[in-house]
Image (cartoon, rainbow, N blue to C red; front, side, top):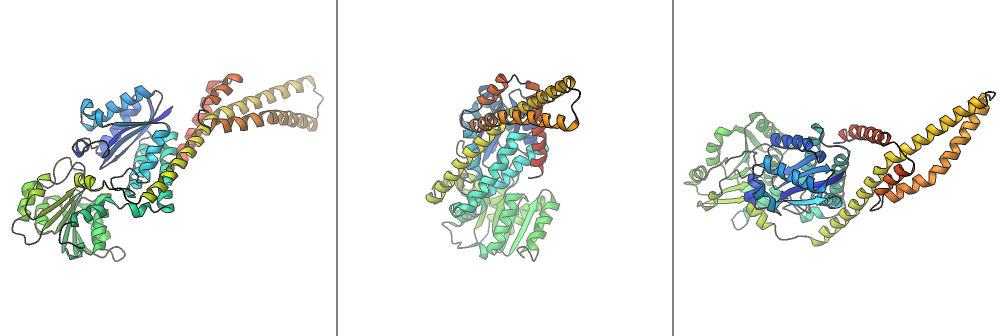
Length: 451
């Protein structure tokens, strides 16, 4: 089996395609279940954010895997395959590992170095584990990606190179305006109560906004976020929750609006924004971080309204900052990809080595039993000494070859050594497979406790 990723992102597709190809959480679950039902895939998980959709799978056939995963992405995203195909990218084996590690470090983000992607990778792994679609390969891969991302942020200055999308968006919103900071804003309206909206609310609170209103379809989540913001141990800002039906009224009283929901249609229409902007003395600032968009793009043409959305952020992030830090992170990624590949290749041969030693132990037991039949006068001490001697001989004969074959297997192109061992020693394929299944079950238990 081999690692394959098929996806699209802000680097490969225009925002108009990304908007239409977004995957709600229930659709992600159905996509993974259908991927496992497809013949080429043994395990799978999906990384879906506001600016990328990537389907990771362990497949036994490359071309069939690419065709199947591409078709499944098209079916579940609602974008036709012919329209979607030009924007898809494919990564295989080490290139797929390199891609995910780069993503985890923020190298492939719209804002280079942003750290929120680590939480999204963790969510992708958790989804695969909850649905039992992520097996040993994807568990190992995503766990290691999280470690690589954390290493990049702790060992380099990539954090200086990038900001969160929220911070970057607020900075872009303030450019070419009279706003020096957001402390002068009396009221902020945050639409949505997910991770991005929560980050936006906390960022605005720390910036000194006087009041924050959280509007969400599930009022309880909005109330909980408002409570956290208002707690003395939190930001201490004046915060309250509002139902979505009250967004129109709240919009008219807000100075800045940040929206990031999972809605499939517009949350704020052009007419609603125009009505809110009418008669205002101060500009109305709108930051749309949703994909697909929450705020009508026509709002940027309304007098007194300043709108920044994902599309304009993509244009503004074209400059590559902090080249030295980025180069450092790239070095970390390259080293970690090599180490991960070596570990996976070594792990691939382990079941074969275990099966070989099991066969050797069975031969020893059989020969000792035959000897006991021919020499019935052996006492317990003699029998134990003979058994131990035979075992030592077998262990010494197997030690150097098994150590060396593990070393060779960890090198590029070393996958064939497992096949060679099975052929040379005529090992039972089912015995090898049973060891693999046992290892997989053990790994699943351990990995589920680490997320």
